[in-house]
Image (cartoon, rainbow, N blue to C red; front, side, top):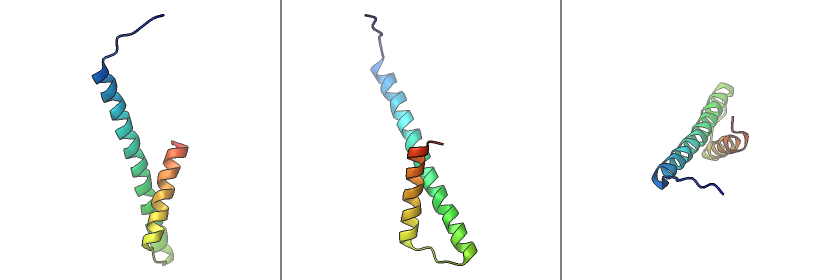
Length: 69
């Protein structure tokens, strides 16, 4: 069996960077979804409530998690 010497600090740092980028992508997508909803509500003259904002944020985050686009 072949073994590789892995620097634990480097592997942990790269893994951590990947997590940070992934979380940032998810949050960015959620904020973008809320911004689009704000624009749509303003365009149609509807009031955007706190509940609407939370729903659009969660929808955006979930779409980023499951679609990964």
